[in-house]
Length: 119
Image (cartoon, rainbow, N blue to C red; front, side, top):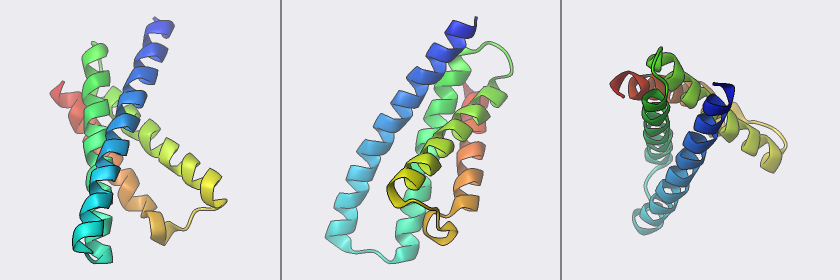
């Protein structure tokens, strides 16, 4: 059972990261072409968090038979934890205004939970 959970979490996290890379590349193209304001860019980033967490929560909820909403929330938490970890590695610190930690956590947990519930 533990092996099944670990494998499922690794697979869904990999899928979340692949989706994030594709969406960030698309967002970068859009930003390059239309030069939106900083507020619009923050919304785009939160949308990427939401889409990736939703899909991860949906996948993890499908694999687990019970408490799907909690597994979806876990998917969102793992996803955002990885984002924070990467930011720490790259920048050396976290600037709450730059990343939008509170809104990022809320979006990731909420959409992951919804994904798990809908699975």
